Each structure stands twice: as structure tokens, then as C-alpha cells.
Length: 146
Image 1 (cartoon, rainbow, N blue to C red):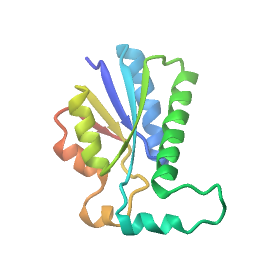
Image 2 (image 1 turned 60 degrees about the vertical axis):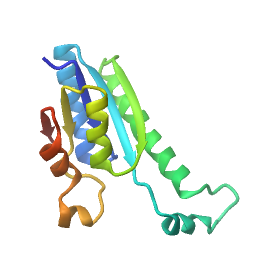
Image 3 (image 1 turned 180 degrees about the vertical axis):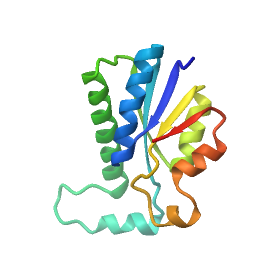
């Protein structure tokens, strides 16, 4: 039934909970799990604040966010491996979370998206609709919100 399951991760409690459900379904259907962390692209002005350095080891904002996203998917992958799941692929993308999740699910022909109901999003998510709300409304495959 499900052969490819996408689990977007942002480090929130709900996204971590979604790993539990994904592992159960992956085990049942022998499915592959795609972990995806999306970090926001910052404008030149926002990114320029990263030029203020507290130490020589400080990186630019984009690099810091990319590394943080890599850590999130690495931790998710380890948690799934600890549960005995072996078919796992991890990805990091830059951009709008909802758009990148939808684009990824289409490109990889995902059968199911398991997404946390509340993430680490901005205040605008409460006003304009959060990532999970956008994904459930626009995805071409089933979406399970945790």
C-alpha cells in the first residue's frame, strides 16, 4: 500500500512523534522512509546580520541553518535505525517549507506524508496557516497529521 513515506522534520516534538508512526508503517509495508528538513531562505538583509561575528568560528546564517537541518535529519535517521528500520534516505532543502515538501513529494512519487501538526514555524504560520495545513490542502497523496 505505502512504499515511500515522507516525514518532514523540523526538530519539533510533533515532528519527532511522526517518526514513531512512520516506523510502524514502514515496518508493516516494507516501505522506504524519506526524511526531509527544510530551512528558510533569508533575504540579503536578514542574512547580512550574520556578518556580525562573535568569534572567528561563526559561519554565515545559511550555513548554520543548513548544518542544523542536517543534524535534525541525522538524529531522525538514527532514531529510525534504532527501531530496526533500514530503508531510510535523508534530505535537506532550502526554501519555503510547505512548497519544498510538496515539490519533494511529487518528484519522489511519495505515497504518504506524515507531518507534525505544530512545528517550529514563525508567527505568520498562525495567521496565514501553518505548514501542515498547507501541505494537507495541496498534497497529491494522503497526508497524516500527527
